[in-house]
Length: 416
Image (cartoon, rainbow, N blue to C red):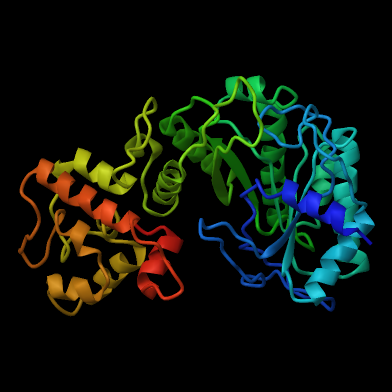
């Protein structure tokens, strides 16, 4: 049984990894305990949106690597502890039976060597699946430079795996994480994507990473712009088929001359998540969202910023515009666009109808007409002023348990 001291150190060491939300698994309960199928994992969120439904723990914080930004790096003066696969498996089952958790997020520092660490991670998930017959959600962190066969074996038992890219450029990676390389991170991701596709095509029995892969990038620890980050995100979705790319605002938990001394505000991270949403669900490209050598504007969300740069496309008539055009209108989200398409089959829509559909008219009115009526500002300067004023008012509101459900849901889903 793992003792309280080691448990505290190992869970504290895992808290900086944000790529751990659980979703998309198709693992059903076939006679054991737990369920990772579709909504099998309950979700709880901290105020900044991080998922806390999983037991989030390191196998070890005794790292052989010396990544400059990491609190567990080789040169850091911290107590070093490890847990055995048996201890992690027993702890997971114990917590599950007490209804503390619904799944496991397991990572590790590189203890002794990549293969040694990966072998221990694989042994842990195999114990949970075979001996304890645990069918709940398991997210496993891949270890860079570990043998491909070990990684493939892990993918047969985990629901999701992730390799954290950390930095958008190879130059920053070499400078701040010298034992890692672009190849050591991207190659196993690519191989897992190929194996997963082959597994599905051959219709083999069992599952192979049913919830896919994710990755994480640290924002602000290196000089890359948001434009570069968004382009890398786009290429990862296209080439690797990732489920999500997560962003983590840099926090100076350790001091190094190569790192900034001040934290990066959460607003920049928030804008990147909004840009990510535009890539995945709204049909935007990285080139449309931000120039490569620039950051996203902080005073406007990326969709509003794009619309202001392309006023020649507006206003659009909501009674005639196709779905792909409606999705580009600030204030009209995916659900609202579908409601508009359905409702206009039966009547000519006006602004009162749009209000009832929960279209955010304080933004949308500058970019649409409804049954020929236009109620927006006349100039780009006036539109920008109205949108930035609205942003400041919205950012000043702290969501609570008693917030309007629609407002809270939009904040959670990222609709723009």
